[in-house]
Length: 324
Image (cartoon, rainbow, N blue to C red; front, side, top):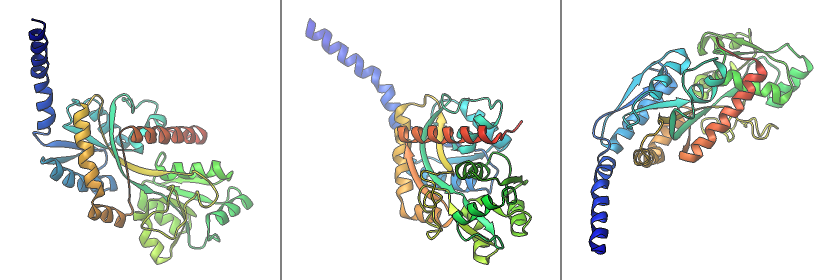
């Protein structure tokens, strides 16, 4: 009798487990939505569409990119935070949505930690601290020396308050103890144009926005803000190499899901993303666009997110940057 009961319990456990196993084995059974918080054509959109194509092939289901721009990413992030935790709604997260906005705005309507499951960080784009051609500085050390010799004389341009370009320069100001004035512009193009014209002297943006101006000689790259040199500008040193150990300020792009997505679905996504991002053709394609593959998943991604949030929280508080 005892053996019979033991066998019956074993059979019952197996029966109860079947729906769970079937769900994991059959996911995904329909197209997956990848929400992007920027309009079509920008770096995030380009990254998202390239990853979506390859990931869809790996999973055997279409990944449909859905652009939901507005409020510096807040609209899209709120939407995904409230979506069903079934793996069929994902988003391309970045610093703006998860490690900057919560400290820049008085209220964002979501918790960047509690409302999301970090799947994997995919690529990052460093900023390149660059100067107008006539600025007498051939290195970051020389620029800092110039700023100290003439405090308040130099201005830096950015596409607006709260971007990694502006916050990176504020981090440099506090790290180096220099006084440089921030001039915000309504977009990347305007910030570059005024720097080239000499109305501002410094600009910090991702490589893709600046490469043509480096080639023409109208702008001069001094340092990249990633921990390691970037593939597209291998001869340009990092800020850390220039005397500021551990300095980092990059735009990262990673897949996020709503909180409480089933672990087996998370694992399936990560296994597929590992393969996608390891492909040489994918890495070369991103490198040509000034993006470095910086794959992290699960706990490692969570640790990175916390570190990034702590960094920008301090910078935003010290600089007084805010958006009403």
